[in-house]
Length: 436
DNA sequence: TCGACTCACACGTTTGAAGGGT
DNA sequence: AACCCTTCAAACGTGTGAGTCG
Image (cartoon, rainbow, N blue to C red; front, side, top):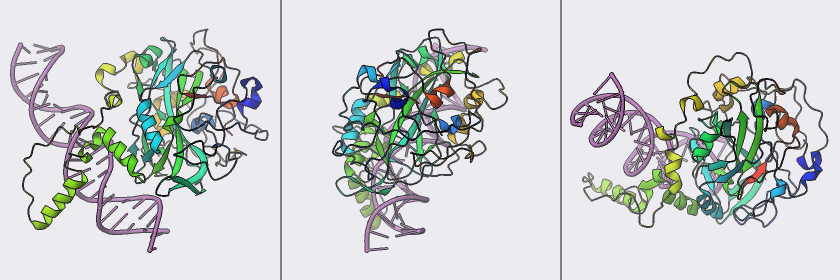
């Protein structure tokens, strides 16, 4: 694996990547292994469809040492403007519901994962600026392991308790509006509330597959794509927000998180203090049941807005994100009647996103010809069964102002992209190392 | 025995079809 | 015919707690 700092020494030392710093985070303790290198936190985990881009795998240099981890979650200062880099100059992302995330993060965010798939709450909701209004972009979300440890709740806090499980198939969630114009994306916040997390390794629904009791970091990727069936992808930028880090669980461990979720998530309204599903009411129901038939409840059941209950301003946008008035212009989103695109290509990605969501018939298979990454501890990547991303010029249709940075080569080799501060609190990642 | 996981459950929210009015 | 609005039922999203598994 390459590290951008080695490839591009001019980036300096504050590139945000590295092992946890002891004591840096009150909620999430440092990983077990001292000096553990983040597997690929700072590289877009899109190798599920990028790994097959090149016919022959790279010969890898020894992994360079990694710079330190970002400081405590939620307390991270804004990165220095000159340290970020990507190939979409001027583009910045900000986390819309940052306060809510920070509230969860201060306790230690947990995300339920189930066999059938569970939504993330809070959801990643970002607003973007600096896009070319005319150009088209894809918005992607993925979740990568933060370290090589498995965690256990010790009553008061999360403690590392052993090595992490082997890496699972990498999956990427594609925002349903993709591809859409920059104007569309900048018109309103972009919400990923439909993303579902699962612990089912054979999940057929395309949910993001995670291990329980592991720490993860969501990332948002922005990819410039000239058109729906584009053979050439343009600039790429990847963002992560430290406050969105979470531990995946099958049942909540920290009661504080449970209370926060109930308070903030409208779907859990029934569990609030005055809800019929709150513990007191449920206990009462059980007692009544034991005594006899439950009388019809006629008491005025409150609106569900518990006193002091949440006023999650993000929910409206999150949940109603796909409402008609926010739906893209027909020619913008145009996900429906797609022209036939033959052969493996980026078109396949756009036309068959399920392939990258893990639909059974399209699930990429491991490519044994690719050697295992030397420093990641991960298994060989999944080959791109449907994508053959062609780099280079020729009919991309990109504005001249945009560097002709082919998607594939960007992720595979990195590049001397112009620098741009990603937005308040956001850490901007860039694919600067080969994926295999 | 214990921790992690699964499942059924009750309840609230969201969604979209159906119907009626203008 | 084309809208707009309201109603309603089904689907979906929640946390809970009992049961299961290793």
